[in-house]
Length: 168
Picture 1: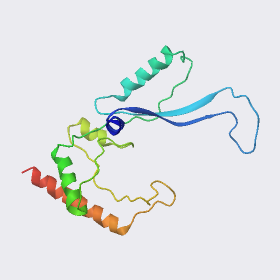
Picture 2: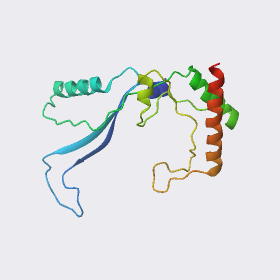
Picture 3: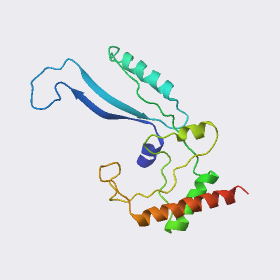
Picture 4: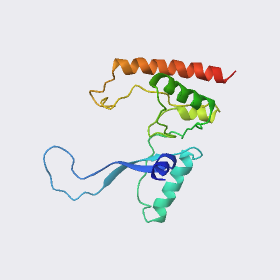
């Protein structure tokens, strides 16, 4: 149940919190203000504006009406059922190229424009990637291995061919 709840329910994350003097050296101060940056991970069926309004109501209801809340970016949730033909094409392609079934994550943390495709009725999936355990994703020395890149290209090609075949 734990993994299912983690993967299929919305969540809120604290990206960072800061207050007081944050420059070089030291300075003893009693901060007058504090800042926090939050993000909300939504699941299909939720709308960002509605969640934002609920958050503001929640803050007011618990005595935090004086908190200034600024919205910085908004992405709607997106999802395609694992039983959809495009999802099955990805699963089959992964088995063909890598020789085993993929790990399936119904929703992944991150930001993208795939929500637009879901909104207009076009399925969207995250296909096989080029990641490996030593890739250091989004770090200054991020890297991929050429063999992994080649396999990812093969997997995407297989996914397209499998999906094309499922549409006949």
